[in-house]
Length: 137
Image (tube, rainbow, N blue to C red; front, side, top):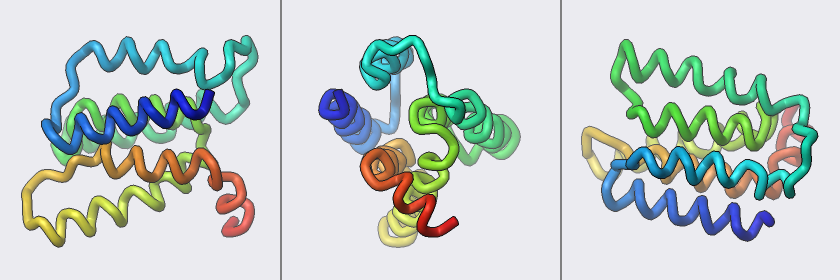
């Protein structure tokens, strides 16, 4: 099931890299990927709900008041926080933010395709997230 989720991450990364725009249909695709990721289980991990709120609320602030993030970035941060939980999502952000800042410094553009950077961090955190979390913290 993680292979299908990785294909979804690759499609989202390529879409964001090329267009920096997501239609509303991606929201429904994300909702459809939740049972696939959890292998159709009725029980969610305890970190899912706190992970979604921990990452979507500050992102909403940065989108609404500062306009540093796009609305798709807010949705994907909440979604990935729900999927991974807060320990692995912190690791994903520790990978994605330096990649985004490096892209910003090298390209000298005003906007960063942050969902693409986030997909790289999420894919690394998907496999090694708990290992990195318990080794660093």
